[in-house]
Structures are given as structure tokens and as C-alpha cells.
Image 1 (cartoon, one colour):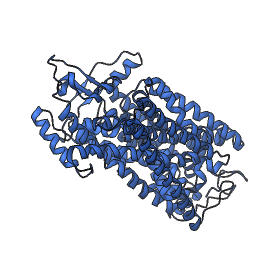
Image 2 (cartoon, rainbow, N blue to C red; image 1 turned 45 degrees about the horizontal axis):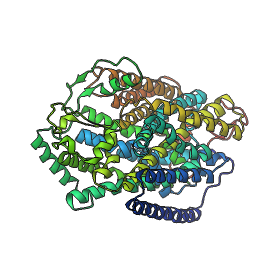
Image 3 (cartoon, rainbow, N blue to C red; image 1 turned 180 degrees about the horizontal axis):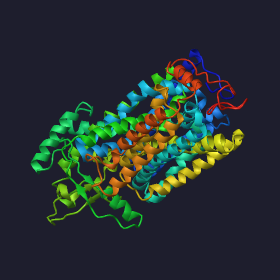
Image 4 (cartoon, helix red, strand yellow; image 1 turned 90 degrees about the vertical axis):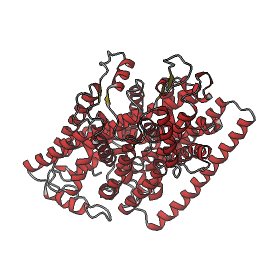
Length: 638
């Protein structure tokens, strides 16, 4: 293992004691959250204005994140990059859940299911299935390798051309993470505009302050312990509204169990209104509507509207998107580095199991969220006089995310006259269910926690790719720790500002932007890490060619189909572009590796050792690996 200064592995007893102490702290935090929400509810009934309730929640959460960030300020390299490798499996599972369940999961996934019905299940299946790949193929091996970043892994495993391999991997990590963080910033802007009365553009920059207060100071150490608190907030906020909505519509407060009843009611209402079936699969046509909207927002001449229906009724897009999201999950740098933070490979595998459980709590509820919300809208909004619509519609019309157009002038709202942007479904559910504003503000705080927790991890990946992988490992190998920290913190600030600027045009739904990031991750890292672990013949030339070729293939298909959906293969959309990038990566990695000299013996021996996922990795001593000077550690080793 690459032993960093000051690192001492924890014993089993120490892990147990640390776990019990953390359970007390976060248990007390959960109780405080419930009490705080109850007090605000009582104050709301006593007449406290809604604006003050919203400000109370945002102040509480941002103050909490700032407190944890300050409390975990560190100048130790292992704590800044990998939280000292001391995070117990269950708490790493919660942190991974928060890191994973971004604004796409919290805000946009249920909305996507609301709009797409059956076809939206590709997101549920792909994102959860990716964790099975992580548990079986990646997590324990990544932990045993014991590096700081994924470019570290690439540079060490493909050590014949370590500098170039590291540079390409770092650039890919920046592209993937920056795309993903843009979606989180979009979610922050939506929440700020609705619940705190800020303009969307202002809200984007205000929300980023919450990201910076924890990631800026303590790196992975403060991000990890912040994310555990954020998970508690987001899962509590997610489950409460739909539970009440289920009780209101069915009398049973378990929406996950009453999902079938909701679908049955939706089907009956759709038949009465002569609408297309919500549960009918493979009904989505290809369109460039998102490209047209984004071109207009950034002042460019939009392409002509194009809709392609040739592939409606075929399963290829559903299957391709599911596979892309699975492979992308297993290749995301900000998720993979979470398994560097646990004490040992066994804890890494257990951690994935806990991650799946904590994610399951939200993902099994998301389809019910969509169904109950759709049932309520079809029952009490569609077909009603526009002048007497429920009060919650007026609030969301102001945001522009819900529009009503009485096209036939009869004063009655038809389904075709209602346009709902999927990103509002979860945030609007408390109002739809008739819950007090306190619960709506809690949901907003949960959405903010989801967006900020993921943004924290992504910004850390971007900053470490520049500060650690490019600056400290390539440009200035003799850089002091303090200089590394300075460069990293500057890059966090720069990346946050650039992400805010990229989020302003709102290029697509949050979940669509996230799907792009997953396609990019599947196209770049998934093949390189997978074959790096399980195929000794894979060499640096193949890995470099694979990452570059995969990235280019993915981006070309993505951009081409986004602008003109007639540019497609088997009806696959830009969201599934990773299929082509992944195929190109695997092809180039295998062909180029076979056409060039195999990896040196010391690397092949290292792979043999890596595939036994227990204990710690023993990398070659400095100066013993071919191509390294005496006293110079192999790539990735400090």
C-alpha cells in the first residue's frame, strides 16, 4: 500500500468504539431535527410568516455544514484526501448515500417517473444496479490499492506511462465531475427561487456558499461527516410528504405498499380522459426540445424542432440507458474514492451493502412519489375550472416550472393545457398533500442537502485532479503539503464559480444532465478500472487510447443527437451515448494492449496481489520498479 505520512490502520476494537460514539452524535442530531421541525410547526400555527420558516431551515442547515467544516479543518494529507481512512462501514454507507443521492435523485427522479411512467424506471434500475457492480467488481479492490484519487489508481496500475495515463485520467475526472456538479447547482437554484424568494440566478450562487464552507476547509474529512448529517436530513424530508399523501388518498401511510393502488387509479382516470397510458413501456420519441430551450437561453439561434418516432415501441433506449447508468455508477470518481476512506477492504464491501440499503429507502419510494402525485393532479387539478385550481398551483406558476395555457378558452383545464417540469414534483408534494409550510421547507432543506452533499464530493474530485494529480504529481513533484492544500482550495472555489455559470442556461432537466455525466464515466473509467483489476495483459498504451477514444465517441454521439435526434443508432438518445463510448474504450484498450508490449512483470505481479481483496497492498519499493530512479516512488505512491 502507498503509506502516507501519519497513517495508522485502525484495529477492530477501535472501529467499534468509534462507530458507537458516532451513533450517539448522529442519533442526537436526528432528535434535534425532529424537535426543531416540531417547534417551527407550532410557531407556524401561531402565525409565524412562511418566509421566516424557510430562512430558519436554510440557516440551520448551512450553519450546521459550516460548523462541521470548521470542526474538521485539517492540514494532514490523508485526512484531506481520504478522511484518514477511518470511516466505519455504516457511516461510509450513509455518506455514500448522500454523495450519491444528488439533486437528480431527490428532486428530479420522481419527476422523471411522473412524466415518463414506465420508461423512467431505467433510472431506478440502472442506478441501483450499479452498486451491485461496485460491490462485486470494484470496492474492495479499490480500497486495497490504497491511493488518494482514481487517477492515482490509473497511474499506478498503468505505470509504464504513468504521467500520461495520470494526465488523461485527471482530465476525464474533471469533465465527468464538472458535468455532474452543474446539475447539482441547477437544483440549488430551483430550491432557492421557490422557497426563499431569490431569483434563480442569485440562488445558484448563494447555495454554493453551503458547498464551500465544508469542502473548502477540511476536504474529504469534513465532507464525509457533513454528508452523514445531510443524509439524515434528506431521507427524513423525502419520506414524510409522500407518507401523508398516501394516507390522504388511501388511508394507509405506506406509499411503497400502496403503489399498485395508485397505478390502478391513474389508469382509470387516464381512460376517462382518453390519455395515453402511464404504465405503457417504450413510448418516448426522440426530440431536440432541450437543445432548443437551451439555445434560446444562451442567445444562440435554436435548431429547428425535430421529433423522431421511428423507434417508439422498441426497448433499445431503455436497455441502453439502464446499462449506461450501471456502468457509469461504477465508474464515477467521486463514488469510487469513498472506498479509500474505510479502514480495510472488508469494510469497503460492507460499506457498499450499507450504501445500497440507505439508497433503497429513497429509491423504493420514488416511483410511489410519482404515482401518488400524478393521481392527485389528475383527480383534483385536470378537468377543474382554472379560476378555482388548488392554491399550490399559483405558487409554482410564479417559478415558471408549471404553466397553464387555456388554449380552447373554455375556462376548464385540460391535460394538454398543463405543463409541469419534472423537477418540481417532489418539492411541490407537501403543498399538494395539504401539509403545513414547515414540511415544505423541510423538503426544500432535504433537496438542498442532496444537491450540496453531491456537489461537495464532485468539487473535491475536480480540485484534487488539478492540485494532486496534475500539479503535485506532474508539474511540481516537490510541492509541499501546504502548497498542495492551497492549490486544491483555490480550485474548489474556481470550479464552484464555473459550475454556477454553467448552470445558468439550464441545458436540460437535472436528471438528464446527470445521465450525461454517467455516460461520460462509463465511457472513460469503467473499462479502464475493470480491466485494470481483472486483466493483467492490459497496458498503459491501451488504457490511454481507451480513455481518449471512449470520451470522443461519447461526446460526438451526445452532441450530435442532442441537436438533431435524426442522428441516432437504434433510436438511442444522447442520454445513452455512453454505450458507444464504452464500446470504443473496451475495443481500443483490448486491441492496443494486444498490439503492444505487455505490462512489466512488477505490474502483473501487483495485479495478482490486488485480486485477493484482503489486507493491505504492497507496492514495489522505491527504485525497484523499472523506469523509476532510486528513491523515487512508483506513480501514485507518496
